[in-house]
Structures are given as structure tokens and as C-alpha cells.
Image 1 (cartoon, rainbow, N blue to C red):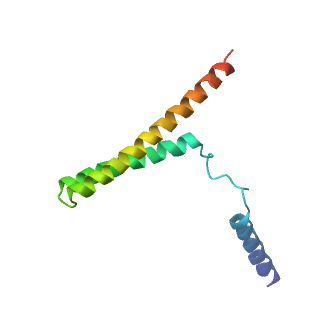
Image 2 (image 1 turned 60 degrees about the vertical axis):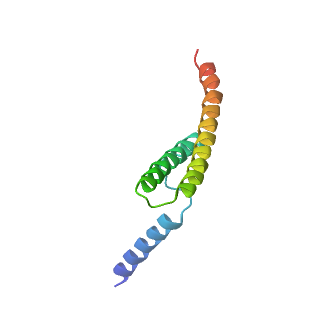
Image 3 (image 1 turned 135 degrees about the vertical axis):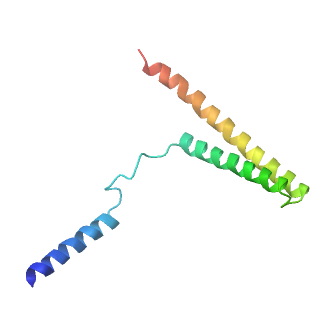
Length: 99
């Protein structure tokens, strides 16, 4: 009886440690600002494709389509500009690292 109780307590302690231990286990690589921006850019492009499809299917009026399209295009342009700025900033640093 005490052996089973000890096993249950050990399994419970291990499970609680695994669940509530902050940062002890790595889930994946850490996201950088550039990778976040690329993911966001992909999402905006997908939203533009969906918007275009819904407009062509007749699901929304042209005024709504034009305003949403302009908003998404502005966001995409902002993202692309920031990605380009980050890549330009990273390029000189990589050149300095090479002998």
C-alpha cells in the first residue's frame, strides 16, 4: 500500500513540476522581431486573398471592399518597410563578423 502511494506521489510531483516549471523546458526557438513580422506579413497577404475572393463572390459591397483592401495594403506596406529596415540593419553586422 505504501509503495503505491509513493509511486502516485512521485508521478504527481513530476507532473506538477513539468506543468508549472517556468522556462525549464524549451518548446522551440525564440521568435525574433523579423520572424514575427514575416508571419504577420503572411497573415495579411492571406487576408487580402480572402477579401478578394469574398468580394468576387458577391459577399460584400464595393465600398467595404475598398476600405478593407486599403487598410490591409497599408499594413502590408508598413510590415515590408520594417522587414527591409531590419534586414538592412542586420546586413552590415554580418559583414563585420566575416574575416
